[in-house]
Length: 321
Length: 317
Image (cartoon, rainbow over all chains, first blue to last red; front, side, top):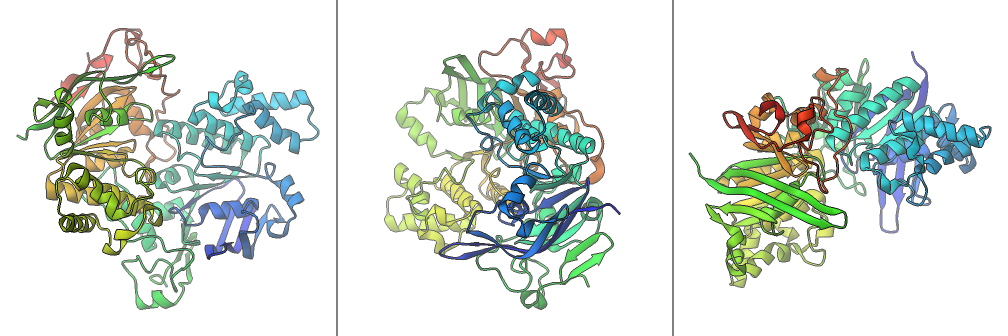
C-alpha cells in the first residue's frame, strides 16, 4: 500500500457573513496517496474549491472558518499550523493551479521573475545563476522556449499562460499539486495539449494531484480515483473503473452522466437532474440530494445516509445497504 | 424537401485594426433549411460569433449576401430591417452580462414586444409575458425579481424567453449553454429542442463544445480562422471527418468513458495563428500534420467530396 500523502478527516468549513452562514463543506473525508491523481467532481457551489483552499489554508480571513476536522498533509497538521509554517509549505510541498490563467499571473512582472520568486523563497541555497538555470529548465519542461522568460504575461496566449502557471506550481517539485479547473478556460485542442503535458510531468516528478473539475471527460482521461461531491459532501468515491464502468451508482452520479450528450449514441433528449443545487445557507435535512433525487424514499428526507463500502468503491446513499 | 430559410453567399466581415485587416469571417457560404439546426463549431477567435452577428446585421458585413427566404436582407433599409428583426433573434452566451440588471424579468421579456409594438394592450403584454415564462419553465412568482436574484440556468431561460417574445422563425444561439453547469446545460438543451419541435424554429447554434453540437444539430459547419473548413450532416461529420482540423478537434474532446484511456491521441501542436492579414493558402497549414508544400499557396474552397459532405483541403481538391 502506498503512503498516504494527504488525509482529510471530517472536514467542516463555513463562511460566516453578517447575513447568513454558508455551510460549504460538511463532514468531508478524503485521502490521497503519493503519486496518485484524484479527481474531485461536482457542480458550481459543491464546495470543491473550498476544499482545496482549506488544504492550502487560504480561506478568506475571518469569513471562511474550519469548524471541525483535520487536514494532515505530509505528517503536518495543517488545521493548527501557524501562518509561518504554512508559508514554508505552500509552493514547496503543496502548490495550486488556479482556474483562470488570465488573472492569476502578475501583469507587471516577467514570467521568468514570477517563476524565480518561488525558488528564491523556498530554495535559499540556490544562487542567482542556479535560479535562472532552473527557470529555463522548468519553462522548457512545460513546453515554452526558455528565451521567453523575459516576456510579460500579456505577450502570451491563454494556453501558454496556463503553462506558465503550471511552471510556477512545479518549480519546487511539490509532493501535492492542487489543480482547480486548470483547463476550463481553454479551447479543446489547447486543453488536450495541457492535459497531456500535466500527465507527463506527473509521471516524471511523481507528484500527487487533486484535480478539481466538472468535466467527466477530463476525469476519465487523467485520474486514478474519482470523488463526486455534492453540497459539501463526498457522495461517491472510487477508482475510475468503479465510477465509469461500475453498475452501482449514487443517483446524483447517474444524473451527471445522463446530463452529458453522448458522442457515440443518438438520443434525442438528455435526462438531466431536475431542479437546482440546494442553498448552502439552508441545507435540507437527511440526504442533501433528496430534493432532486428520483429515487427518493421517506428515510432520505429525515436520516443522513451512511457510507456503504464495496472494496475501493464507496457510496453514501440509502439505496445501498 | 424543405427550403432554405437562410443562405449566405461569400459573406465577409473584416475589422480594421492598427496592424492591418482582421479577417474575422472570410468568404463563408452555407444554408440552413427551415426547421433545422446548423451547428457552428470552432475554437475561440475563429469568427463564430462574428458570423452569427453578421447574419443578423448586428454587424454590417464587408461584402457578400445574406438571403432570408431568398431575399437579400443586406439591401433592406432601416424600416424593412426593423420588420425583419421580428423574425430573427439571438440568445447570447453570457446570461450574466446580457440582461439589464436594473430591469425586472417581466420588463426584460416585454421589452422586444414594446419596442416592436407587436402587442400594444398592456394586459395582453402581461399575459404574453406569463405565457413565455411558462413556456421556458420559469415560475410565475419570479415575475418581479431582478436578474441578480437568479442563478445562471434561470437567467438563460430569461434570455430564451426574450428571444421568443416576438415569435421569431430564426434564432442565433451564441454559446447559450457554455456558461452553465452540466446538469443545467442539459435542462436548457432539452428546452431548446422542445421549442424547436413545437414552433418549427430554425437555429444557428454556435458553440465550441462538440458533444453539444452533435446532440442538437442536423448539419455542422467547422470553422477555422474565419473560414468554413468542413460542412456536412451531423452524423457524417462524426463518423467520417475528412479535414485534418476536424479530426484533431474530435480527437481532443475528453470522452467520459475509459475506452480511450492511455491511448495516444493526435494532438495538434501550436495555437491558432493571427487572423490579421492572413497568409495565402490553407490557414490550418501551420498546425497540420499532413501539410504539404502546396498547402501554403492558393485558395482552397469547399468542395463536395461525397454527397452533402463539403471539405476545404488540398487532399481532396
